Image 1 (cartoon, rainbow, N blue to C red):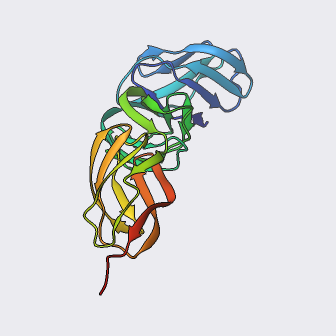
Image 2 (cartoon, one colour):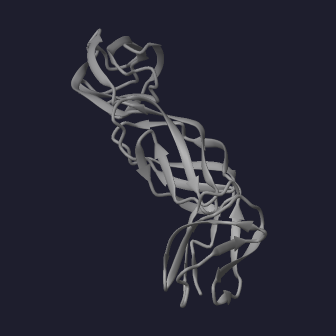
Length: 247
């Protein structure tokens, strides 16, 4: 006589189906010392709503013909999440994050706002999940659902890709050392700025402005790439290195 699922929340409320034979006209279903609420009954199955409980309890079905052999049902506590990492990523989704906590071994879904993702359980204290696409940039609540219930309280922030606009000055000596101001949008989480692939020292002035010191380069126009938590943006030929005089 199988029972499915064979585990559920300590708070009760899990829909459980017990299958077997001669189950029609069931008068009671016991989870240990507690009586479950019968919601459906046929000759081959009984569906109930589990009562609250803890640990492992025997489940029996009583009909006018007697009481069945016991099956085991396992009560699982609600999960507890301590942190997630990283806490930001691209609005398009696709990044893999790690969630740490307790009671995560039965995790079956992670919600990012209203978007659902299927996690990979590493162990009872950790899971990984691929972030789904977000509806828009900004923070969303993160909830983990397990056999023991759902827990939330963590936040993940979607970040749009940056926009690189003007670069001023837009030219300077090939020896580098020019302090250039880069304007645009979504620049507050900038991770790197490169000129023709060479990393530049930079500082974030605001979400719309960066200050970058050009590295040495080769004479001619080069691409400037700004990379943030939300992705990368390229100003094609946005800066021109000027060769120094030679005699």
